[in-house]
Image (tube, rainbow, N blue to C red):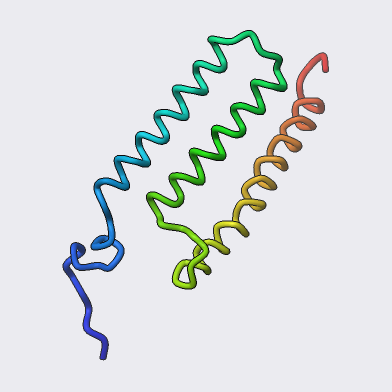
Length: 114
């Protein structure tokens, strides 16, 4: 019979946590948001350039936080966690895309004057 562990501080994921990595992830996220704010408000750029900047900053912040907070990488120990995340991302975009599609056609069918 397996022995249950009731102390959450002895869990391996909690023991591997690092305050420095959490602070680095927070600083990375705040820096990306600050740069995105400056790019959006402070410069006279075209819409495509601004969207490209924002997409790159979002990707850098997301990948950095995935590595720093969840330690997701391509090592053998974390491979299946990384694969499950990569396979979940298309489902997220499909859900958002189908929701936009559904509300677009719903609005065209039920709103007056459309």
